[in-house]
Length: 405
Image (cartoon, rainbow, N blue to C red; front, side, top):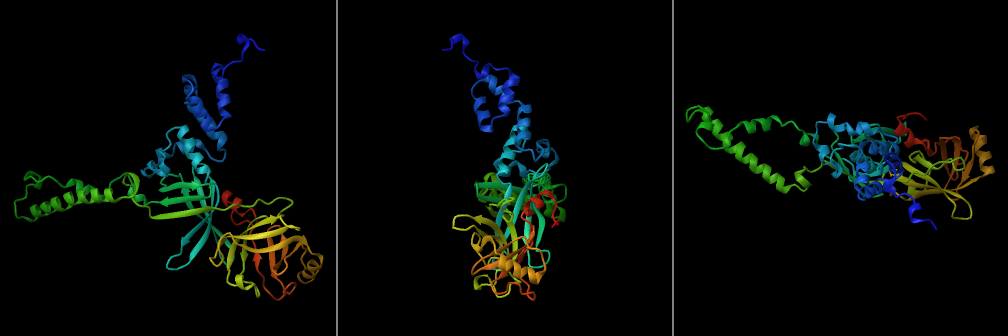
């Protein structure tokens, strides 16, 4: 046994440089727990350089220094109540902000009411890191060429951002968009005029105009209407506000649902997000006749006797509910069908996937496949449903390489 005087060193006995190296390997919760153990550990855990290194190691896709400088560049008060967090004033608070936004990175589905219509539109949003914020790209699909289009939608954490984020759980997020003018530091011209008018009834406060003149009556009217009425309206609006601290109601509220994105591999190259255009189909099944353009998630299913490729609706026209399996095909080559299609199309086929009572899928290249409904295999005179988006669509959107096929 080890003698008492030969016992190992306690954590608090380690040199400060070594303790800092140890804390860099820990998560935030453990570092905060260590800070409550002793004064020495608390002093080390409060070091700004330690939290800066934690931010850089945990979030390599963004620049923590730019997040720390956001408040200096922003003239809006909205960030004071953003997500229930105070504006980042040190690297420890920057770490808290980045930890919150990290849970939003990825693909989400937004369901909202279309303007002047009774149907809902499913949109696909992709959140990705920028150097000083989190950007959101809206992926919209249509039957016209190109089948998809990417537009910048939101910038969370950026200067002037009036968007609050609340994560309900790992699969549900709520975004609140506010009016930037409601949070502006500079008072409006109306506010300047109201504060310039005397609100206390006294003869001297009504100016030097004689009683009965236009100037006297105008100042008196402003005193009773703007001053007292304005204060009453402000008190009423503060009392009726449903937001904490009298924050105005949001202009728009977005409910987002996380979309799991299958990752393509060398063995399963078709896994991923694709766009399917059913509007050009020739005699499709009745339940898909009005499907239009859909965003599908292609996954491989190995639960049965043979491997199958399953297409699940993610976003698009509301004819098909999200999460429904639109079609299923056998993930195995069919030499007879491949020969027939190849003879009519003259294309070199990578593989031919056959789906009984569903459709046949011709893989033209690594980023384009053709779906052919049963009965029209090899018919050169028909336009067929097709998918034109590479599985790496969302990664291309996040990196700014939109448009490369």
